[in-house]
Length: 173
Figure 1 (tube, one colour):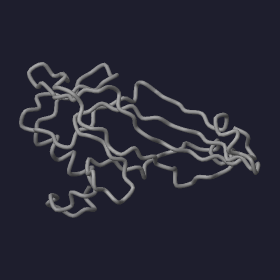
Figure 2: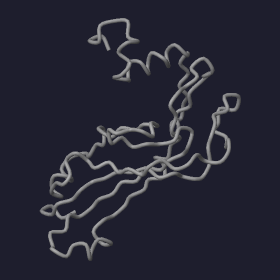
Figure 3: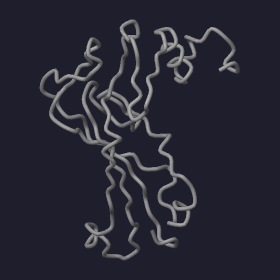
Figure 4: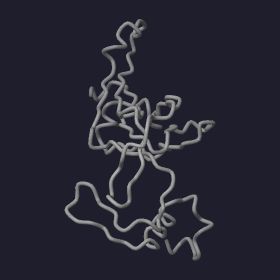
């Protein structure tokens, strides 16, 4: 990045394949469950600091913590819409904000897309806690073996929209 040039950072998600998946608890693995549902509307999330100088982007870690995912096809909040039980690949885009008047001529050379295959994931909207025996941590050497109530409490503690399920003062979380 040129420290003095302006850039926009964007993220989107593309389907990995044309399949729908289901989780098989007995084998602790994802299995193909049929053909994919129709594609959701393609949306792009612009980093809220965009555009900014290259120097600004390079001086600290860039976080997309404001990005929100949903499975609601009628979403009008700008969230990224994904189909549950489908696999997705996040993509990160760096777009040079070209100051030239005829910048559209150079559109093909003014961006770079980065794909990290290790970030692929399966979108889910619900868990069957009572059927979870263990939770494997991909890329780690051990296994996390919490009981079902621990998993539920972890989700409640981590979800800012689950206030109604908390039975103590929010300051205790």
